[in-house]
Image: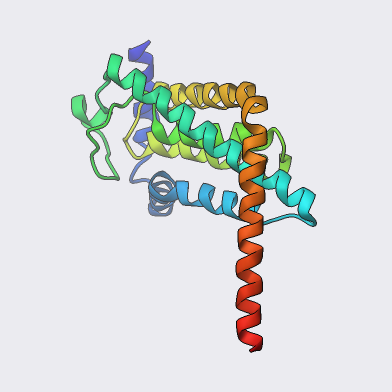
Length: 202
């Protein structure tokens, strides 16, 4: 299995150098793609036609963040049990980003991206679809730039799914608390807005 994993890795990684634009694009996605996910979540948090839709969107964002934390926690546990060196540790690779001492399996980037995508898509198909496209680009880019083997990113997708699944199952136990926190947020921001408005009028 690892031999096949390495062969697929070399096929993808050997594309480096054939197109400067593709190299740059893959580096941007591999290094900064997480920012795009963050921007989508921020946009979703503040979107909505009315208070009800805003609350639903904000619940989705909270669920997604919880899913990412749960999935990344699974990765940490796996890292304590099994350490797989990065591709550049044992092979000559076309490395386009800085070396990392973290375990290669599973990929934290693939885990975070997939967990957010699974969680968001359960309630918002549009944002979820955009995130899934970004997730596919993310997992390809992490192999392309030489940071991970294919099995690393596939393992990340699996732990991402497990994290979102766990939070989905636990959601009925914490949804009321999330709603209360969101109501507190709404009340606090409304008071702050009214205070700013009154100070400008005076």
